Image 1: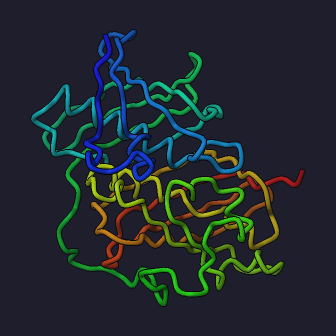
Image 2 (image 1 turned 90 degrees about the vertical axis):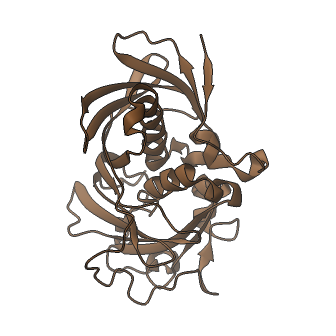
Length: 298
């Protein structure tokens, strides 16, 4: 038995305008584990950094599968959405077909816990523990200055990820969204060293932005969008994530998302990286913290 499931993609949009919706489009499969759900999906080569699948995209796909499972098995909690995702990367999937196995660990009126495993060729390669609750969509009682002098949209000197920018040749995610880097912080592009911090702008394509669920999953993905901040210290290459925790605070307003990343300490083997995602209104939409390995020169 297979049943087509989608996270309500915008029906009037062309497929080319909804590349992230396809990450969130799932087909229910017969479960092989009692008490668990199983879904087929696909993560295309668009969602890669170099030859590696983008971690944040795998988190978002896992969150979409967990959301489908909760809505189907606990419709009374259909208003809940994943507010936290704690992810361990056990292996490196390749672009193409994936499966998700999901299981409810707790179901309450305020909190639900769902585990999601991303499986490829019979192996669990990514495991995410998701916490569901109600998003905090109201106005905050207190909010610090999140963005400083960072404008809501990319200015004229922003470096868009295209063939003229070295990052555009590596970050294929920019083929499924619009991405621009702030050159004032990305000093490594000028051959200079600077503080381990970066900031950028990212926006989904119009079709993906129209769907409120897809837009929220896109924001969850965006919390892993910054390049490794040790690049500003001269460390280039793949920085394998040891552990990634992502929070989704609210659904984003339409427009560009601002991603601000920094490290508190860059060691000889590991570094931490915090990323803050702020929408066009200046509200925090998502945030993440990860521990990763220092890129090793090849």
